[in-house]
Amino acid sequence: MDNELVKRFLSSIIILPLSIIFIFYGSIFFIFFLSILFLISSYEWIKMNKKNIINKIYGIIFLIFSFYSAYEIRENVGFKFLLFIILVTVSTDLGGYIFGKILKGPKLTAISPNKTYSGLIGSFILSLIVGFIYIKNFSSPLGEIIQQKLPQIYNNYELNIFFLILLISFISQVGDLIISYFKRLAKIKDTGKILPGHGGILDRIDGLIFVLPIFYIII
Image 1 (cartoon, helix red, strand yellow):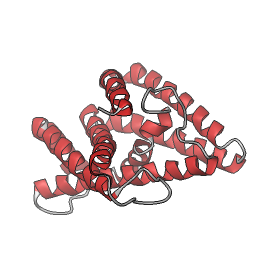
Image 2: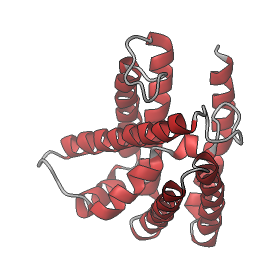
Image 3: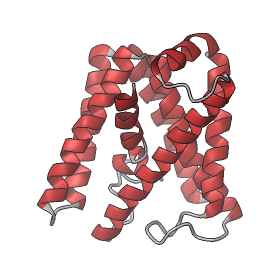
Image 4: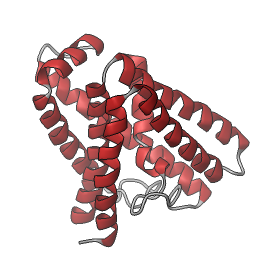
Protein backbone atom coordinates (compact mmCIF):
# COMPACT_ATOMS: atom_id res chain seq x y z
CA MET A 1 0.00 0.00 0.00
CA ASP A 2 1.18 3.55 -0.81
CA ASN A 3 3.05 5.08 2.16
CA GLU A 4 1.16 8.37 1.88
CA LEU A 5 -2.16 6.50 1.80
CA VAL A 6 -1.21 4.64 5.01
CA LYS A 7 -0.39 7.95 6.72
CA ARG A 8 -3.68 9.43 5.54
CA PHE A 9 -5.63 6.45 6.81
CA LEU A 10 -3.97 6.42 10.24
CA SER A 11 -4.42 10.18 10.65
CA SER A 12 -8.06 9.98 9.55
CA ILE A 13 -9.06 7.29 12.07
CA ILE A 14 -7.80 9.61 14.80
CA ILE A 15 -8.91 12.99 13.44
CA LEU A 16 -12.44 12.16 12.26
CA PRO A 17 -13.76 10.56 15.49
CA LEU A 18 -12.17 13.35 17.55
CA SER A 19 -13.84 15.96 15.34
CA ILE A 20 -17.21 14.21 15.63
CA ILE A 21 -16.97 14.26 19.44
CA PHE A 22 -16.49 18.05 19.52
CA ILE A 23 -19.27 18.57 16.96
CA PHE A 24 -21.64 16.26 18.84
CA TYR A 25 -21.26 18.00 22.20
CA GLY A 26 -21.55 21.45 20.60
CA SER A 27 -21.70 24.62 22.69
CA ILE A 28 -18.38 25.62 24.28
CA PHE A 29 -16.71 22.40 23.10
CA PHE A 30 -17.52 23.13 19.48
CA ILE A 31 -16.50 26.80 19.83
CA PHE A 32 -13.15 25.67 21.27
CA PHE A 33 -12.70 23.19 18.40
CA LEU A 34 -13.57 25.80 15.74
CA SER A 35 -11.26 28.35 17.36
CA ILE A 36 -8.29 25.99 17.21
CA LEU A 37 -8.99 25.14 13.56
CA PHE A 38 -9.45 28.82 12.71
CA LEU A 39 -6.18 29.89 14.32
CA ILE A 40 -4.17 27.14 12.60
CA SER A 41 -5.79 27.60 9.18
CA SER A 42 -5.41 31.40 9.44
CA TYR A 43 -1.72 30.99 10.24
CA GLU A 44 -1.30 28.67 7.24
CA TRP A 45 -3.15 31.12 4.98
CA ILE A 46 -1.07 34.11 6.12
CA LYS A 47 2.15 32.12 5.74
CA MET A 48 1.13 31.00 2.25
CA ASN A 49 0.28 34.57 1.18
CA LYS A 50 3.10 36.34 3.00
CA LYS A 51 3.78 38.65 0.04
CA ASN A 52 0.16 39.56 -0.71
CA ILE A 53 -1.57 41.66 1.95
CA ILE A 54 -4.89 41.82 0.04
CA ASN A 55 -5.08 38.04 -0.17
CA LYS A 56 -4.30 37.80 3.54
CA ILE A 57 -7.12 40.17 4.52
CA TYR A 58 -9.80 38.72 2.24
CA GLY A 59 -8.76 35.18 3.16
CA ILE A 60 -9.07 35.79 6.91
CA ILE A 61 -12.47 37.46 6.44
CA PHE A 62 -13.62 34.47 4.41
CA LEU A 63 -12.34 32.01 7.04
CA ILE A 64 -14.18 33.91 9.79
CA PHE A 65 -17.43 33.66 7.81
CA SER A 66 -16.82 30.01 7.01
CA PHE A 67 -16.23 28.98 10.64
CA TYR A 68 -19.16 31.14 11.75
CA SER A 69 -21.30 29.26 9.21
CA ALA A 70 -20.18 25.95 10.73
CA TYR A 71 -21.26 27.14 14.18
CA GLU A 72 -24.63 28.43 12.95
CA ILE A 73 -25.42 25.25 11.04
CA ARG A 74 -24.50 23.11 14.07
CA GLU A 75 -26.54 25.16 16.54
CA ASN A 76 -29.58 26.10 14.42
CA VAL A 77 -29.93 23.26 11.91
CA GLY A 78 -28.43 20.41 13.85
CA PHE A 79 -25.53 18.08 14.48
CA LYS A 80 -26.77 15.47 12.00
CA PHE A 81 -26.94 17.87 9.05
CA LEU A 82 -23.48 19.30 9.76
CA LEU A 83 -22.10 15.78 10.06
CA PHE A 84 -23.82 14.90 6.77
CA ILE A 85 -22.02 17.79 5.03
CA ILE A 86 -18.68 16.82 6.58
CA LEU A 87 -18.97 13.13 5.66
CA VAL A 88 -19.92 13.91 2.05
CA THR A 89 -17.02 16.38 1.79
CA VAL A 90 -14.53 13.95 3.33
CA SER A 91 -15.70 11.10 1.07
CA THR A 92 -15.38 13.43 -1.92
CA ASP A 93 -11.73 14.02 -1.08
CA LEU A 94 -11.09 10.36 -0.30
CA GLY A 95 -12.86 9.14 -3.44
CA GLY A 96 -10.80 11.47 -5.61
CA TYR A 97 -7.56 10.33 -4.00
CA ILE A 98 -8.28 6.58 -4.19
CA PHE A 99 -9.75 6.51 -7.70
CA GLY A 100 -7.06 8.86 -8.99
CA LYS A 101 -4.28 6.71 -7.53
CA ILE A 102 -5.69 3.43 -8.83
CA LEU A 103 -7.09 4.40 -12.24
CA LYS A 104 -4.86 7.40 -13.02
CA GLY A 105 -5.67 8.63 -16.55
CA PRO A 106 -5.84 12.14 -18.06
CA LYS A 107 -5.06 15.12 -15.83
CA LEU A 108 -7.98 17.33 -14.84
CA THR A 109 -6.25 20.72 -14.68
CA ALA A 110 -2.82 22.29 -14.52
CA ILE A 111 -3.82 24.07 -11.30
CA SER A 112 -3.54 20.76 -9.44
CA PRO A 113 -1.40 18.30 -11.45
CA ASN A 114 -2.30 15.30 -9.26
CA LYS A 115 -6.00 15.56 -10.00
CA THR A 116 -7.44 13.36 -12.76
CA TYR A 117 -10.80 12.79 -14.44
CA SER A 118 -10.96 9.36 -12.80
CA GLY A 119 -10.50 11.08 -9.43
CA LEU A 120 -13.29 13.53 -10.29
CA ILE A 121 -15.69 10.67 -11.05
CA GLY A 122 -14.51 8.75 -7.98
CA SER A 123 -15.25 11.78 -5.80
CA PHE A 124 -18.87 11.85 -6.92
CA ILE A 125 -19.29 8.08 -6.64
CA LEU A 126 -17.94 7.72 -3.08
CA SER A 127 -19.76 10.84 -1.87
CA LEU A 128 -23.06 9.41 -3.17
CA ILE A 129 -22.43 6.04 -1.51
CA VAL A 130 -21.50 7.57 1.87
CA GLY A 131 -24.23 10.21 1.67
CA PHE A 132 -27.04 7.73 1.00
CA ILE A 133 -25.78 5.32 3.67
CA TYR A 134 -25.86 8.15 6.19
CA ILE A 135 -29.29 9.36 5.06
CA LYS A 136 -30.68 5.83 5.30
CA ASN A 137 -29.52 5.48 8.90
CA PHE A 138 -30.87 8.89 9.94
CA SER A 139 -33.72 9.06 7.42
CA SER A 140 -36.46 10.50 9.61
CA PRO A 141 -34.87 13.48 11.43
CA LEU A 142 -32.36 14.34 8.73
CA GLY A 143 -34.93 13.98 5.97
CA GLU A 144 -37.24 16.41 7.76
CA ILE A 145 -34.41 18.93 8.15
CA ILE A 146 -33.52 18.72 4.47
CA GLN A 147 -37.15 19.05 3.35
CA GLN A 148 -37.82 22.00 5.67
CA LYS A 149 -34.58 23.94 5.31
CA LEU A 150 -33.48 23.40 1.70
CA PRO A 151 -35.21 24.20 -1.61
CA GLN A 152 -36.82 21.13 -3.16
CA ILE A 153 -35.81 20.66 -6.80
CA TYR A 154 -38.03 17.64 -7.43
CA ASN A 155 -41.05 16.06 -5.76
CA ASN A 156 -39.01 12.86 -5.46
CA TYR A 157 -37.17 12.76 -2.11
CA GLU A 158 -34.35 10.47 -3.32
CA LEU A 159 -33.67 12.72 -6.32
CA ASN A 160 -33.41 15.76 -4.04
CA ILE A 161 -30.88 13.92 -1.87
CA PHE A 162 -29.00 12.77 -4.98
CA PHE A 163 -28.58 16.33 -6.29
CA LEU A 164 -27.85 17.68 -2.80
CA ILE A 165 -24.92 15.27 -2.42
CA LEU A 166 -23.66 16.10 -5.92
CA LEU A 167 -23.84 19.82 -5.10
CA ILE A 168 -21.87 19.39 -1.87
CA SER A 169 -19.29 17.25 -3.69
CA PHE A 170 -19.01 19.74 -6.56
CA ILE A 171 -18.52 22.77 -4.29
CA SER A 172 -15.98 20.80 -2.26
CA GLN A 173 -13.94 19.99 -5.36
CA VAL A 174 -14.08 23.60 -6.56
CA GLY A 175 -12.87 24.74 -3.13
CA ASP A 176 -10.03 22.22 -3.31
CA LEU A 177 -8.97 23.66 -6.68
CA ILE A 178 -9.14 27.24 -5.40
CA ILE A 179 -6.78 26.48 -2.51
CA SER A 180 -4.57 24.48 -4.92
CA TYR A 181 -4.38 27.59 -7.11
CA PHE A 182 -3.09 29.69 -4.21
CA LYS A 183 -0.63 26.96 -3.24
CA ARG A 184 0.63 26.96 -6.82
CA LEU A 185 1.10 30.73 -6.68
CA ALA A 186 3.07 30.33 -3.46
CA LYS A 187 5.03 27.41 -5.01
CA ILE A 188 4.29 25.03 -2.16
CA LYS A 189 2.88 21.48 -2.10
CA ASP A 190 1.05 21.66 1.25
CA THR A 191 -0.21 24.51 3.41
CA GLY A 192 1.47 22.93 6.45
CA LYS A 193 2.84 19.74 8.02
CA ILE A 194 0.68 19.36 11.11
CA LEU A 195 -1.17 16.26 9.81
CA PRO A 196 0.98 13.30 8.68
CA GLY A 197 0.05 12.28 5.15
CA HIS A 198 -2.41 15.18 4.89
CA GLY A 199 -0.30 18.31 5.07
CA GLY A 200 -1.84 21.29 6.83
CA ILE A 201 -5.31 21.97 8.21
CA LEU A 202 -6.20 24.00 5.11
CA ASP A 203 -5.23 21.05 2.93
CA ARG A 204 -7.90 18.97 4.66
CA ILE A 205 -10.70 21.50 5.03
CA ASP A 206 -10.19 23.32 1.71
CA GLY A 207 -13.45 21.96 0.29
CA LEU A 208 -15.40 22.24 3.53
CA ILE A 209 -14.67 25.94 4.07
CA PHE A 210 -16.45 26.65 0.78
CA VAL A 211 -19.36 24.24 1.28
CA LEU A 212 -20.31 25.57 4.73
CA PRO A 213 -20.85 29.28 3.93
CA ILE A 214 -22.76 28.47 0.73
CA PHE A 215 -25.16 26.16 2.57
CA TYR A 216 -25.46 28.64 5.42
CA ILE A 217 -26.61 31.26 2.88
CA ILE A 218 -29.02 28.80 1.22
CA ILE A 219 -30.53 27.78 4.56
